[in-house]
Length: 393
Image 1 (tube, rainbow, N blue to C red):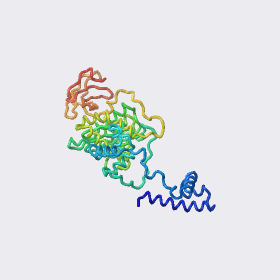
Image 2: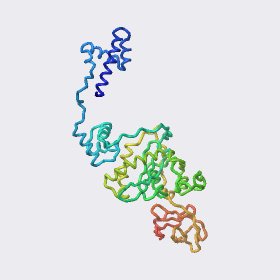
Image 3: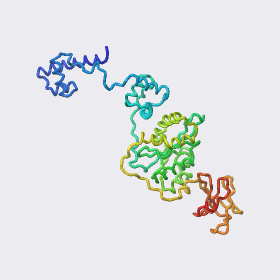
Image 4: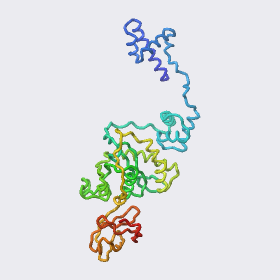
């Protein structure tokens, strides 16, 4: 027996019992409706149809009728074929967004999911585990940013895993910087921080794992040092940004969930666009993917306003660089990273022999030598002096 027939029979049996009590005065119309789980108006309508037609009047008038909103079989076949032939493996939400955007799908996400489930192309999601309470988000954008890297086969054509660096706001889940690099490290962190500050401003705190480029840990498994800083820690301190280290994967839950989404969606988007190189992938992320991703996943902050502070200085590169102290040799040269850097005569002092100077390596691999706050030499990546007009006083 079909399920609809069983349900219809149960309705008739329950109505006959309740209606009998109503006719004998044992129940009011309101009470009878409550027993049946319907409104008083619906009960009175059923009573009228029962008095005129008997039990036949209780039949659902929709039975045997085709819904005027029913989608044609051809459209069902088209969507199933589209998923099978081009988007196999995509999750339903991602596929539905793409089908609406590029393939003229007008049906809802729920309809699409039911069609793909019925076709056997997609398995229903497993039941979620026990409820766990998440840490509340920060109320304003700019109060805390997450940064993390994920090593994954982002571009199968490369034949090797590379790192995706993501910098995301805690309040809204908006991603401010995202790019692929061969390996996560100090320079990738500096690049992301630079993109955030130049695009949005200074932020208040920076939440990361305890990787060696973020923190110095005196003893494995113990707390990070608050006095011995890495280059990232030193730069954040100079910028006035609080650096917070996570002590468990669960503490980085939002980043971990975001990478789960990206490992599903971004890989498929890059493959669908035919992208095979890191340079092309970063251009696609910057120009196409990132804005679409944020439109889909950004949530509204709990409070109005921003915690970002506009960056108005011109010396950000002097902070986001590698800095090391050196002692000048007797011939007024500095040895640094297999380079021999000659210091030219300067009005600051007659010579710099045995003086302690700071050497800065920049993102473009050029080098600067500083005596206190003053720059006394700038050099190209090969160690040759740059023209005087390119040197900063």
